[in-house]
Length: 308
Image (cartoon, rainbow, N blue to C red; front, side, top):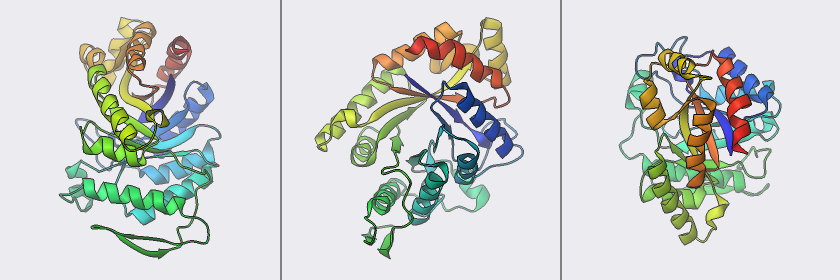
């Protein structure tokens, strides 16, 4: 099982805090990647201070200040950026990192953050997402010396030089969600990884099955994709430590145990095993208290070794 760290900086984190967490995750050696969300407005009761940080500016900085850990988004919001600009940004960060970027792209859903920062929030988002995926991957895949054209309902590109190119031959593309039809079809066309955010074992079983079927129907092997889950983590050496960590993030222990990865290292390893049994190969651990580096160390030293 591959473990990755997933952060939600809109809830309150500076770039320096994110750098500290990314470096800690890298130094511990148990986590293959550092990912962050792409939001500009806090959710719930968090204060959100000192204010939002941009996902790709953050990752550009981390690309130069880390060495080995992979970097990415769950998920970049298609509503925030034009696809041609996004292709340039991500390819540049990939080059800055020496080829360590992974690219999650979603339709965008949080209407309040669009209103707060003057970002258009279109009614038809899924069609835009589909065209963005076609454009971004098309630009990256265009051979040197050739041009890229695209004429869609939402975007048109003419005689694009399709530059710059990423450092990697293929930047891994992540698509996710619980949509029963269109989402699996989109994953079958574009994804290297399919991710389910905060889904139960039962819902993961069903959706992984739909995606596998769609991938096979599209003429690919279902094994071409990595299947993953994102789940909140709240691990403690004993019940008291679990309760303390849950209180800090404003969550109930029983709710966390039902819907996330909460408990002692043994309990959490067993819970991860349930996801592994239904096909999950990678877990993104949502870490909500970014000042608690001991939490990362505990997961690295006591959970990861149990996973094989």
